[in-house]
Length: 302
Ligand code: 13P
Ligand code: SF4
Image (cartoon, protein in one colour):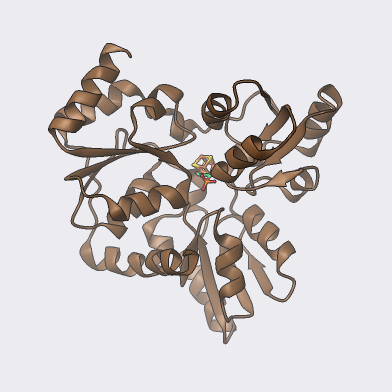
């Protein structure tokens, strides 16, 4: 363990801080975390937290969601500028305009969204629970925001619903093309293709398995394949390799890097624990409105 990692472990005990980390942050950050997981798992951990504070190693919508769900808790972010561009790719005005056009519209909001977008929504979802939640809604008409790719993937499985899409996307997943996957398949013909549903439909059509980061990790463990082509951010390779030392994992293309997630460094984690001052702050009325769709997600996902 590095000196910085040792100091982090000591300080988090002394100050009673729970460190949560997403699979996309660097391996050295994942190693000092108490819990590492996908967005759904981490939102559950944020609600259950008994510690005095939560230090969220991820992008801003993650820290914000932890604060929305657990307002009494001090929520810290190692870098307040670590952001997810997709979280901003919808507009409240447009949502309300579409809402007025349909009688039974449900606005389904991917958790990768700002608190402002959540406030305009009926229920939140993550990639691991979207199918279950959307299929359980009584509404026929679904406005899915902000991610078009996840929306289209869920819609392809639920033909009984009428989906309205929004043109948001994750640049990390969108930049993985069908041609990249076909070239990787040619290079490693025995490999199983694992893809995150933020990828385009053209890529998903080439996949053997489609799921959230934790779904991809579980599948790699269960599969009899020995080699995999992975279509998601390369942060997951740490857990994949740790759990499956004898299996081989290839990224579908060279650069599958989320800049926001990579802003979280061990040094910043230590600095935040020392200062305890990079807190997530929200107006209470706005927070309460954004809490409703998140709480509904946790209920429906059970
Ligand atoms: P999951 O970890 O829920 O699969 O989400 C992926 C993601 O893009 C997080 O930003
Ligand atoms: Fe956002 Fe994509 Fe980064 Fe996930 S990987 S945080 S969706 S930019």
